[in-house]
Image 1 (cartoon, helix red, strand yellow):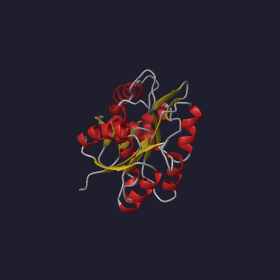
Image 2: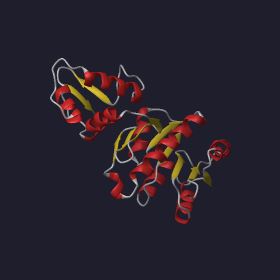
Image 3: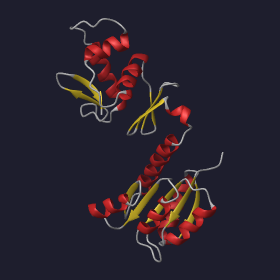
Image 4: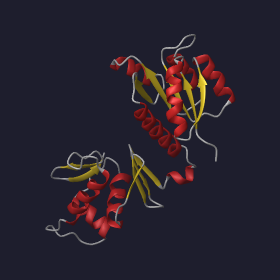
Amino acid sequence: MRPQTILLVDDEKDIIDLLEIYLKNEGYRLLRAGNGFEALEVLRKEEIDLIILDIMMPKMDGMEACIKIREQKNMPIIMLSAKSQDMDKILGLSTGADDYVTKPFNPLELVARIKSQLRRYTRLNVPRENKEEEIEVDDLFINTSTREVKVDGRDVKLTPREFAILELLARHRGKVWSIEKIYETVWGEAFFESDNTVMVHIRKIREKIEEQPRKPKFIKTVWGVGYKVD
């Protein structure tokens, strides 16, 4: 299996040298380019998995390079820039970049973002027959065949009932499910009004998948109605 290849495009040698130290330590294969023209030339010859693309470069800047890359390639692109204004970020993302990092940056944070983008890209490009078994909601990943659950790459262990509830809500994203309907679908039995089993299971699932269970990102409460994954 070939190592994943990252193309570093920046005219600042110090930044490239710094990134190489961190990324080689993670096992990535690295290629360099000093401007947009050089980056396009490398792309013609090499198979690239992700691009780190600086905006301010001579000859061809990152914005123009990103547009030209997107005409033929769909790998993740993370833009680097000394500009931190919202409009600069919006412009960078609108040209086709997947993420935008402001200089100066924490190399460990950039490595984390690289890993996240590569995970998403890999999952989106698995063979079509596997996609029906996979459910993805932002950083939440569910494989209904292997019963695997991950949140931002972290393995989450759920009981069979917890998994069934999460799968039900995630598979019907945006739909609100009443406690009664969840119980009857997952347990296959008639629901009793005084039964709080579903609420207990929802609380346990949130404790496992939510960074802040009291402010859930994935399983939302619709007061007086039920629950949904949004």
